[in-house]
Length: 194
Image (cartoon, rainbow, N blue to C red; front, side, top):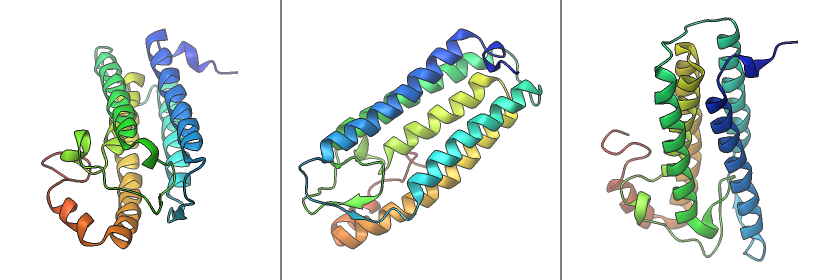
């Protein structure tokens, strides 16, 4: 049996499990916050399933790249990966806390929803996805494989692009011109780029 823990040092695995634990905690928090709120309309179109399956599949394939020593990077790049993992977790967690009771793992709108436009949301509309993407790229670098960085970064980017299109359609349907105006003054995930 293959021991995947023998391929990376303890720093990577500690950060990985902190990331995994934060993701579970954020889901539980969303579930607890939605109790007592108006029922939301579900507009998800399978995007949450796609994110979860895609993200963990990309990570698992990246681990296989490491086991087979494919596209290995110099050891020092792992430290950049650790920094990205921490930064991504911080951005994602902050963005979700700023959304407060409006955060949900699935795309949906509640009747009393508001457009959050302060903090991280002042310049980008989806900072939680930005943080998630940075974390996943960090995981690829932390594993020390170019193939993992490429797979995680490109793969999750396209999944998030789909999720953003689904989410923004729902927001425009609910908020109309108010959301269109917000779109004109912000970027999707990366300030000044996209």
